[in-house]
Image 1 (cartoon, helix red, strand yellow):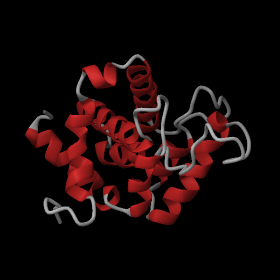
Image 2: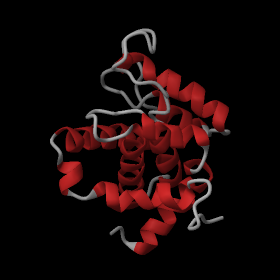
Image 3: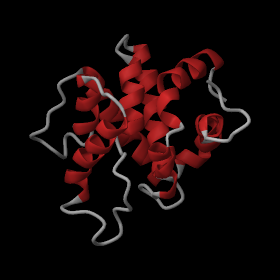
Length: 175
């Protein structure tokens, strides 16, 4: 289980986003491996980014929010014709467009979303330390998912509170 105080702080950072239809729709999009959805990957990235930024006394709220929205591209990148260009290079801009329509983003949150694929996108160097943290957390989470460490660490059950508490119609919904 997540430490209660940090868990509550984390959920407070993303509470206005996690229950939106757009964010919840990421649950139907597979991510790096088929048994982990884009939603759970994004919550994993958001939580790890939150913890790292909190540890380094950085803006953990922007990191959690940007981490949650960093892959809000809303298509299955494995399906031919679902998007234009090479997914690794183009999905940050698609995610930024979708996130900008969902809510008002700070400059830092925009940078986090747009630059999270660095260093693959060499010309898009992160402007903020928080952007580097989220980019790093994204790579750590992808490796954990690919090597099935995500399941071994029981991350889905640990992070599922975010989805279940804020899913519309849930009796446990806060706010």
